[in-house]
Length: 355
Image 1 (tube, rainbow, N blue to C red):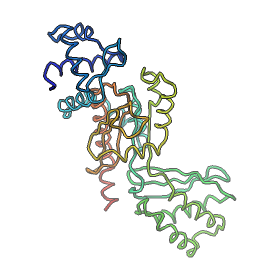
Image 2 (cartoon, rainbow, N blue to C red; image 1 turned 180 degrees about the vertical axis):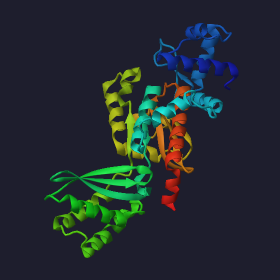
Image 3 (spheres, rainbow, N blue to C red; image 1 turned 90 degrees about the vertical axis):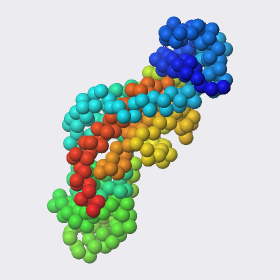
């Protein structure tokens, strides 16, 4: 049995109706709502064939049909051929909003996920550039209180990581300035992944050079270097996590809680993205996802790049019953906007740092 033109029209009509209303679709609904030029009886027979072919399923004997993951996959593949070169009609506006008040990458990522969530009504996320490959520019120790110091690690492209340090005894401000300068001088140009290998030699150098007269600060050095080496490699920004509570698919409280717990766990995201490819855009529908918590979801991700090199991903997680046309277009457009902004503001600097 083949998927002829009439079956395709009926299948697309069912998918469109179900995306809009989240209700099982019957032959009469299709006949009234869409001008397909055939009777409800003919539509009913075609729907039965589509069910036999695995494109539709009947959740209850008295109800209509709903699309399967196989149906959504056909729909998305067909849709992609039509929209892969298109851009969101409000791309310039999107970029302007993202750039607004985005003096640092952290702010830009937060803006991006907020906008993506607002435009799609689903859970959005950005995976920031992996720290292991990031190059250190400067270390700064900032006193917060008598027994607390904030360590700022400034990386290429103005990525700033923060670590709060607790002191056993107070350290004068001028001593913190000295050690900041010494660490910056010795660690400038190294990648984050190198820190674990060089930390012992840097500590020895500072002990030998006696660039600080503070025993307390010298005692702090091993702890300080250990904290730098332990920084998380994956940084995820997310927004709209509770948007799923508005969807009928997640009326089940247990199901909703499992989804939210999965999304809030950074290690889950790290594992999830290990299974994605290096394509510019990836779409995983329902059972194509590797994790049980996402079996009823679609995951759409797009890459953003600097100087042509992939450095991160932005994406959306929502129900398989999502508005794929809008979501794909929006995700792709925002990823392009992020790439443009990063390359415009940080591209040359990154080339110099890596060289």
